[in-house]
Image (cartoon, rainbow, N blue to C red):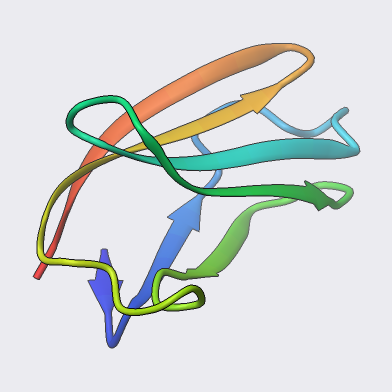
Length: 79
């Protein structure tokens, strides 16, 4: 969920053996709005500031989380 411009991400793919992941936020047209590479061991949760590059407009977005072992795609609404 998004609260005060912060998206709290619970790992959508099994990352027990992963050391890095790429998180991308896309608008509904598929344009990448935010892209972050993260380094972590046993990542369970990650907070992403959606307003880092200016305020993210309200609307429907797609979260894409990818690792060497898999890909997860989830939709979320920024209010």
